[in-house]
Image 1 (cartoon, rainbow, N blue to C red):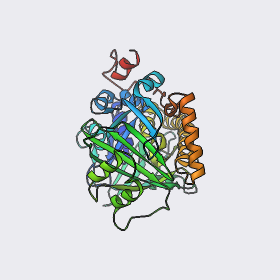
Image 2 (image 1 turned 120 degrees about the vertical axis):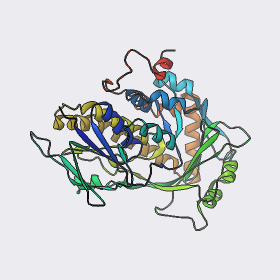
Image 3 (image 1 turned 90 degrees about the vertical axis):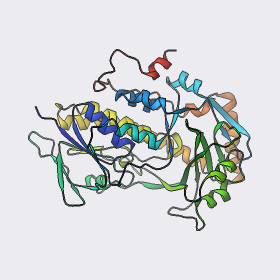
Image 4 (image 1 turned 30 degrees about the vertical axis):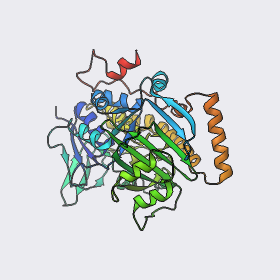
Length: 411
């Protein structure tokens, strides 16, 4: 019996997770990445326990944990340094069964790519969907066309082609695309300052700053501000960050002093304007930002893409009916991810308040809740970080053993 074939469009975290999961499920997988190399942006990514469990399902969880940083504690602060709320990873373990980890995106991409067969990833391979295929008995496969005119067909195409997904527009041309969320984000990775600090997110007027230590002595920092879209600073993004955040508490000035003038990434933030009709059509499945872009305020964009990947692979057994498998994927993923989109957007609006009275009210609310309801920050992840993947029948070689997450959960 021949292997069923799958094409994954996009070599980011979601696309590579899907490729690994499908390959372990028995599919012959090809990943098509438009960039010349798998060189993800220089930024970190938070992996909540839900994403770690999904990575466990494909046998990658322990390797990710080995190269991740665990934050002993985290704080919400004001620009002058006042602490409004505090939590720690012990509380996350109690609440969700595991800690929140921070890894560098490049390391996670490299780890996932290394789990694919040689030649499975094709770079400099921009792909266009030309036929979504049919799922009925004897239905035709899906087809994609590369920039050089080469055409490839597959039993399944997974579109992980990002926020402005061309595949999504092809499948659902009448559906509104993502809309600007009202703020932009800056990201950077720099050496840690000499003076220690606690991982934190600091909320000011119209924006925030976050600093998260990585496992290798560097720090992943991010910032947001409520500004018009498509903006760029004439004198560079480092200068823009210095104007906005250079007077905030330690370690913000030290981190900005350590960053090079061109080492700051700036991206406008988009969110889903409306739920899509489905996460699939024909023999094509949409995944991650291609179908549910969300603001970063819950740290769940990448986590939900990883979830998508393992659920899709679970449903898409090589001998499964394609129509039933893809319908099950949509049925499980659409309501869950749209709820995460809505919750993240609500917090995003909360962080971008600008007026002094509104920010004073926000400070009072946060301080009061922190006193009355410990682990306030973790409560925003209730029903999200405690998710568990379906039975990991495709995680061969792990039966009879516990992952590190399972061992920690049972301590």
